[in-house]
Image (cartoon, rainbow, N blue to C red; front, side, top):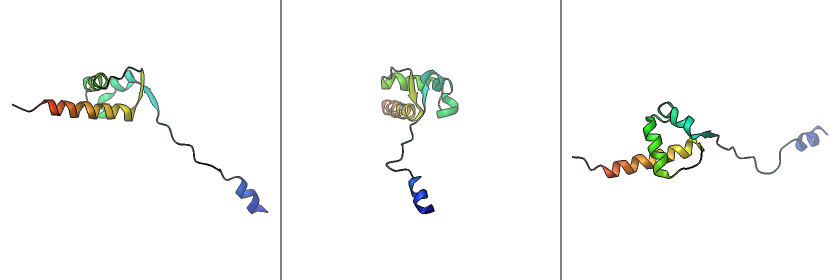
Length: 80
């Protein structure tokens, strides 16, 4: 009988997916060096380059924007 009670307490269906926390963009820009290891002007440039206009963003979205921005900057500099 205890087995039947135990089986009814198990969750059924797919487990809920974890959602990433959303932050105010300015908070991430203000802490860009501590969070992403980049100065705040890089975060500002990445946001502008990506065309982000919302007031909030996840860390991974901003990290992707930073990576794309820096990759584009690297392509633009040929040295010399």
